[in-house]
Image (cartoon, rainbow, N blue to C red; front, side, top):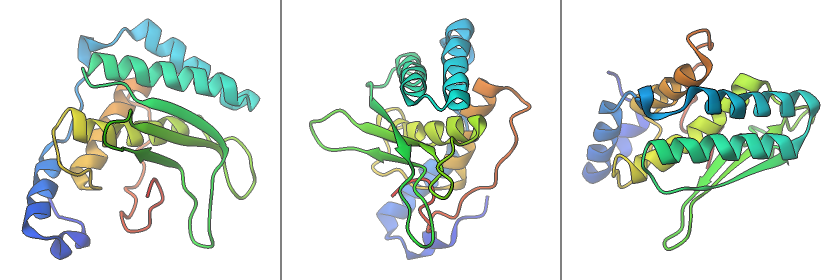
Amino acid sequence: MPRFPYYARLRPKRQAIYRRSDAITEVPLGELIDEDDTQLSLRSIEGGLAQDDRRQVQRGTAELVRRLCEALEVPRVTLRVLARRPSDATAELHGLYEREEGKRPIIRVWMRTAAHERPVAYRTFVRVAMHELCHHLDYDKYALDDSMHTHGFFARESSLVRQLLGPGAPAEAEEDPQLGLFDA
């Protein structure tokens, strides 16, 4: 599999982490999750986005992420759904995973676009939440010393989205890891 251009600028230790990350291409859920409970959480997210109800989106997303962490046997994270995406002249932040020694990691996901302040599309929102969860899995399930945007990382993200939303979920282009469109 080809590597992103930034690979060449990494030190050997980080290149090894990159290669390990790249080799993991799925997050198998199978029978680990209860389909009915998962669908309830997803419907809550979808309905909340349709109604522009941040609290409902927060509840549904927190429940979904909690269930996934439990099923995948990783420590829980704190999930925050925030209103309008922060942005600058070149990009807007979709989600953010923050990890600090001795504290519970935090996933932040924004539900409204920066430009128009409208709720984002349901599938896009779920994809961003799963993207941030993949960072958590990199550390706590796969024991990687860093969580990098590799082809394997994006494949893991897509694996989760397909399992949650079904095979009809559109394939989205992999984001350039240097642009920081998903997180910092």
